[in-house]
Length: 168
Image (cartoon, rainbow, N blue to C red; front, side, top):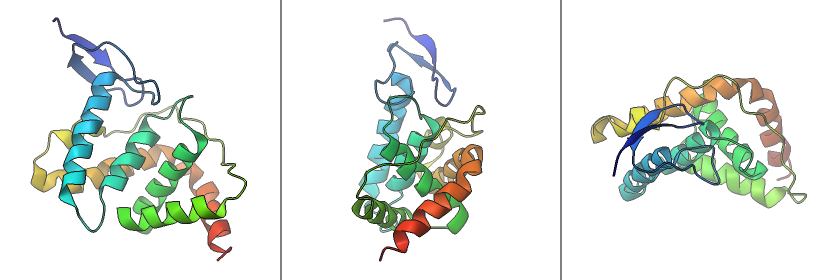
């Protein structure tokens, strides 16, 4: 099979791939989505107490946001990026906030977000191709790179979290 260069519409990376299609949920090429699955396999195999896998899930969603991504998914992704990059939370702590938001939002309505026009400087490709020893640090850098394009939503996310924490 002939490999063609495929450009991911979400993050903009160009990958040689035999697969021409696009992911039906995320604004991503199938080739980029395969990198996500590879990185997910790595992170889940760690069984780490900080649960770095949460950073991968949230970062990928925020970088590949599109019309088919559910409002709860992008809200949780942006909450995760905000907490990791602005408040130095771990993936495990982010997971706890996600549970809090899900349990306390009885209306199940979430804010509407629009994808920023600019692309983040780092992508999943930057993470995949570093050594395992450097991978966790690069995951955090990727997370904060994607957060940098969404940073205008900081106040919305801060207020959202505060609202549901007050319901305790």
